[in-house]
Image 1 (spheres, rainbow, N blue to C red):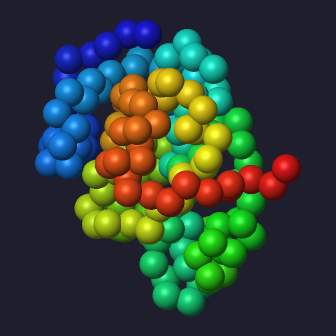
Image 2: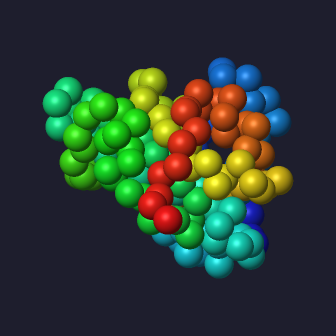
Length: 164
């Protein structure tokens, strides 16, 4: 894992947002290899893919509100389970919608610190690990966190996000 000292503007914005939420000791690492996908992140970090928090944004079909799902890198999200918990049908969000609603591009969306508060669901399987890794504003930046950090700072609802 290689670390860079330069910080892209979106990383600086994310760190500032995290600190405003109370995450004072956040440690962001810029990687030389891409962390855009869960597998790329796991490879770059040298951890199990199940410890990667992938941030997937959906769009409510009824209200057009963004819905953030934080899932383990190994899990495939079942949109019907999210829709049932939300009480609304979902559609895929395109890159422009994601950037406008979160302030971040796909592949670098952190689990919190977005430009506005998002309805958030957290994959219950993430709570089983002592350390997780998530995107930190770009497809080349990550940071470690615990499930407690994830719950506290995202203010998400823990649910099953994948069918068995």
